[in-house]
Length: 352
Image 1: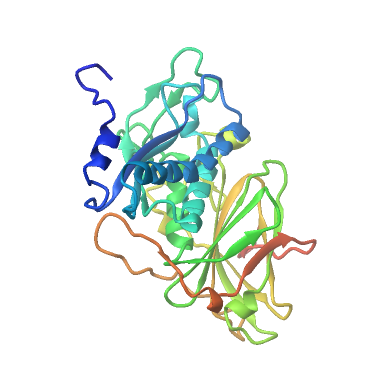
Image 2: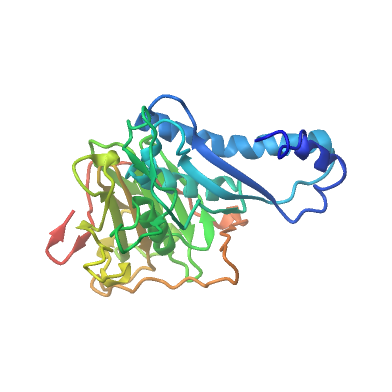
């Protein structure tokens, strides 16, 4: 910033005159990777630790300059995986942004760090990466859609599909979930109708994971020897470039939203299956380097009666805040672990 436009100690001055107890919320903006060297996949995933650190530092600042004041809610209203002017700027358009965004959304819900998160931006224009910053691609775009979509940029960016998957598979209340595998992340939720929503992220780009979802029968109040009905969606890399690919596949379909297809995501049926829960758990296979979303429905004695996708109540305003579930004692713990048996999503003749 120039000398004329900068205000030294702006935040400290505002807090010291009583802003913290008058504000409805505090806004933060952040571009997570700002390094000068081309980042590896691990470098980009490692920036997730900053999510909690930012809220902790702001809370500490408020305590320092406005002691005793309860901080208002925080809103991350502008963020991106990388800063375009720094090294690796092209990662914004790569499939790694899909997995990273899924982890950010899941971690924020579990940790409750921000009351709202909003990527920058809905639509933006392509940016040509500077010389020396091309290790993750020559072009970048902060938008989940290009301003030229669908005229010249025929597909949304890979991260667009992550938001679509969360909209389908993540419910209204946070549900406890843990994973025994550091490469397999698990985020669970409850829908208002009692369904369980699951988002599973496999960060291992070489190996699929068989995730044994324990305590399903108890969580859904199932009797023994009944069936859990499941709908699912899987987001995978668009080509052999893996996390560096600049496209994504939706349930194995490339170019799912291309201009030529004239389709919306509702044009494609979810994967569906019926799983017996006599053991109390089911197993879902998560492909290498992918995001899997699933909705588990109430148990049925009929393994063929698959339900439609649940409709979530839409709240007024531009942000739907997920309500945290307060009654911990009423929750069954979902435990995700490695398992040798496999129960896979199937649709018609297609098997993953």
